[in-house]
Image (cartoon, rainbow over all chains, first blue to last red; front, side, top):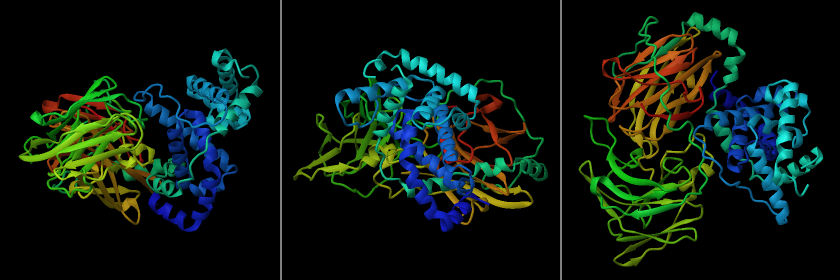
Length: 173
Length: 425
């Protein structure tokens, strides 16, 4: 059966389901992707791709014990694949493209964290974002990243050490 | 940052401040339709292996107009002892407008050059050149530094007072800049281009002769976001300013199914896909079914486009994928057409334009088999296209005259997903 055919079947039976699902998860996905990539445009693109992949196998997502975990895993895989495909061609160091409102020191704090996250290797960054933004346990993070809980702990430890040593994060805390 | 609770608080401040736009459900659904159900193949891997064995892993590539033909299992199986040739760009990055650009001169038209300048201290040049393969009808196109062509067609309808704008981003020499040109109406003597609040650019249209035709063009580069407004002047005075749609200049902002770096965005799409020519066709056998397939190619305002027609592709049976138009001496795109699976067995299709030096291309399949493909000429260009069932392509190798290995690549477009990479043999 082709994906076109599957999609047509899905759209006729489950379109409303998916629209509701996508609407309720969209903002969270973009924010998570932003944490993983540090780029607003890429975050939206990855969130779209993740939802498209979920839609292409919607029957599987719906049947999953934890659709959110399933979707999160798709998003992380999408982000990792993007990184792998881009790491040679990616242009370095564009300034963060995020509109933030608030006092100047708050804006500075966000920019500092964003820069610090972008300096972390992708897996360490993912562990930090999943632990401190998504509030996942190490076991859940391990499932999302496809590694062991021990690896999660060691990656988190290394990442936290780097963040603690980052001068730009020392004030304002 | 001393405490983990502090990190959690900062994280909420950073990511909680992001306000995404409304969920683009329609785009997501469209995108989903191009994604093959890869898991379908993976989930029935065992069955697929049995199916493959029964179906005899198959790669079919049939030059047109010769009849359908399968390549025998014992076909040529060269093992190129060459290292990976550099891929000019994997999937090109989404550009963020932040380049310093200049326009040195609007050019004279000599040698086809009609605009030059710098972008991030690197020289850029817009040229009209022939991108047809040697010995075929001339195909004039605008290129940036000899790469990524935008075909020019005679007598286009003029859609704005300033003419028809075209832009490309995500390319050398400055991926974060946009390079643009206008086909200028005959009555226009001068153009003023205003980018945001920057200094206005005064452009004089340049007459370029290529392939026996004359084209009136004006080129420039854009390095910053902001509206691009163009005012055309004629003997009668200034026309009303025309604002170029941002979706043409910075298409990556308007998320698309396929990458847009290197693909020209044209306001005039009256020759969108051009004329399709069949470049390969055949029958592929999967799990006891033999289904017909056909791949056609065309060069038009949408780029180098491939039309795949197959009963594998579901009720509608067709997909179209476009990539940047390569130049004979520059990078060419390898396009992975939207694949599918049939009874759990993956069906993948690839199409690639090849340069004049390429005598053949071999595709190595998972499992170790290798199949040799001969380029086919169509519409002034040369192509190779093929369908793979029950296996994946692990390496493509380009051969020149006398069997000389020109290049070899393993980083192919995502299997089963509409994508392309650019490669220079």
